[in-house]
Image (cartoon, rainbow, N blue to C red; front, side):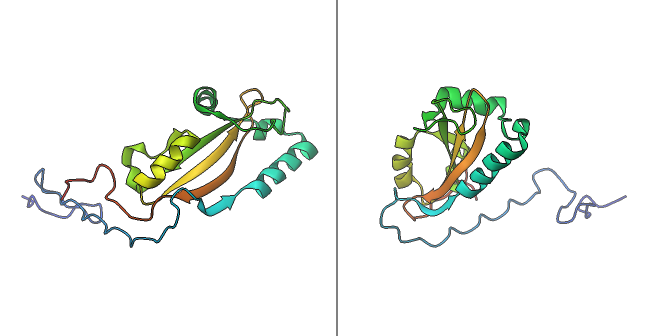
Length: 168
């Protein structure tokens, strides 16, 4: 008869009684970062060259289906949570191009990956040490969508990620 604590076929796991599994130690928080203005974007990545190349390819090849393929959930999000981009759609030229701001960060826990209003980002910058914002433009008419910009906001003081408080 096999011992209840024998090694399983999955490396790093053990077969045994329930509750015998050890919780991984939480990773230490990163060093604080000196940030003069938490609401000022840093580590900015501008995707304007990729956008321009995609639009030039569209004009040359006419393969609109490859670029105007927004997911139905993205279109719905743009309808209810999108903000006016202030410029027309680069494909269909309609004036109501929408812009979405997605926020991601380990400190945000379950709130990571949500769409936020631009005005809300300033408040979040003081609540979290660092999080990345992705700006996506979406046209609800021709279904054009493209990542425009990404950057980091936050006050530079790492916090325990949401959902890990009290775990040991």
